[in-house]
Length: 177
Image 1: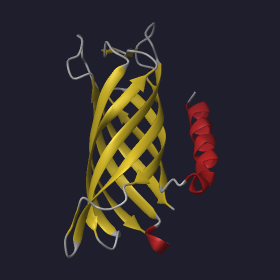
Image 2: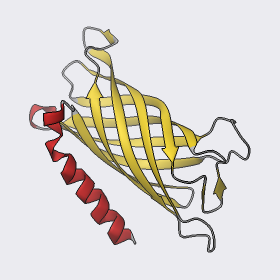
Image 3: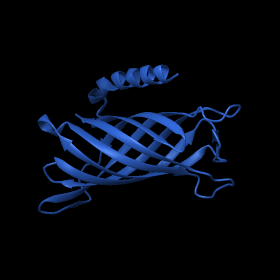
Image 4: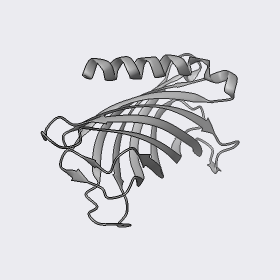
C-alpha cells in the first residue's frame, strides 16, 4: 500500500508541473507521520500581490495553500484505515526581503475529509480546522526551492464531540515558479 501511495503522490506531483500556465506561484510535496498515521500531500500555492508588512530586511508575506492529502493507519484492525482530505489555508511567512534563507510560517485553514475516523481517532465531523507552525530554508537558483518542517494539528474545534483531533510532523519540499 505504501508503494501505491508513493506512486499516487508522484503522479500528482508531476501532473502539477504545468502549474505555471495556471498562474500558480509554487507547488509542494509533504510527507509526515503522527498519532500512528502516515500522511502525504501535494499542494499548490498562490502568493498575495504584496507583503502585509515589509521592513528594511524582513517581510511578512502571505500566500494561499491548496492541498490534497492521503492518510493511512494500519494499527487498528477492523477500523477505518485511510482518509483523503482537501484543505485551503492562508499562510503568513516571515522571511527576508531577498526571499532566501531561513523563514518561519503560521497557517490556519479549513479541511474537508472523506471520513470522520481513522484508526482509534474519532473527529466527528468531516469539516476540520487545520493549523500549522513551520520553519524552513529557501535556496537555489532564483530561490526556487525550500525545504521545511511543519507541525500540524487538525480538529473540529469542538463543533461536535468526540473531537480527538490529530497531530502531524511533516517534511515539506516546495518549488517556486
